[in-house]
Length: 177
Length: 180
Length: 171
Image (cartoon, rainbow over the protein chains, first blue to last red):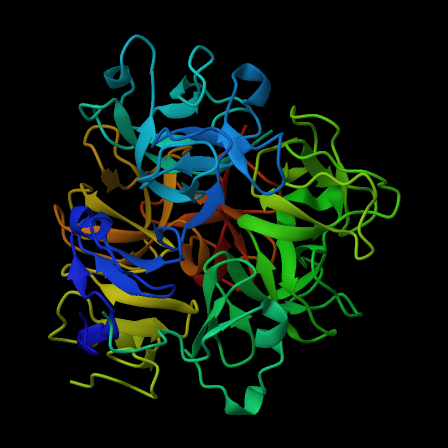
């Protein structure tokens, strides 16, 4: 419960883990995520921050997956399917607690991405801080190491993967001349 | 449970409803939940803006409406001046109008996220998943016809139309790659 | 300390960035609406943060202040440093809220922000990293590593209003 506490967040200040465990939320409820320094608003489906929006996925759940616009349904998203999709990347699924095709998941489409699934060559640890990110051509929905080319969508800013093969990146669209 | 039944001063409204709120009642920082785009919006003192958008001044010489691509007007010396985007000036490109206005008005331009974009009158269909780009008509967009980028790409089409809507607005994931 | 202002729920009401700098005694979760960039800011215990910023550690060897341009530090995870490389492709953006070496800093990755231009600037110029540390250099044509576009004319070096773009440009 939040009673007009300092800053008037409905659920006050909570860790990211605690936020995902909350129940009984209403649309518009907000909380300050102390783990990642975001305001999160409950949009009716997910706790989203300012560079996220919820979309129905046609690709099921893969938290950290690299996504494109769905080719099957309007205004939905899907996993990328390899090199043919390399230039149409729109964001990364993050913070999803759902698991099936048709679920509504948060898509991060700019800025700090805490968990991008990557293959990064032989191992997710292969990418160094500052390396460019592109899609994996061997694993749908995954990222890899890139070079300055039309299909990169950001930079790695951590130095090694988490135990689940996730890397932190800055997601930014690029223009190549 | 939360005490404040409504987190947003002006509640939850569609964009049309938000734009109908009498501005004389508004204070800088007032907020509302935009149910069309599922985002919180804030009153700047002149316009409603969200985290995907920037605020500029229309210097087109005419009104600009939703979905028109805009660029920084480098022919002007007045701060924040913007005009219809010309594909030959891609370095000045900003995004698509979300809240338009008359010449001289503050307008709101979406630079990232999912927003309606204006497709040129020559476009008869769109295909979701395809890239889209500046057309030769300033401010207007065409379907690239593929997922592979070429010159002046501005985003990824999110909706397929066999017959274009009357307002010619199609949702686009703005901010995709742009290859010169 | 005000709890509610104008019925809007911001702890510190509506303020410019300079006014926000003057606020003291904040605690995590307190909020303010910034009238310079039209964003709700929340104090996270270290910095004032909003959706336009990314929080990274200053590894430049010195202090960083608002408008200083920073790039990804390839030697340290989740960190930024300064550069004297013209058009550095690893540019992140200008600092919004700075700090000393080793401290967290908030860096602008999108939206309305001032940069410190190293020369007079024409509206519409694109900025990239300059050969002078922490400064941004304006160009009339897009070049590699450009990250923002000037939205005002300035006659000589100094602060310049810009839009930090969600795109980085590469050659």
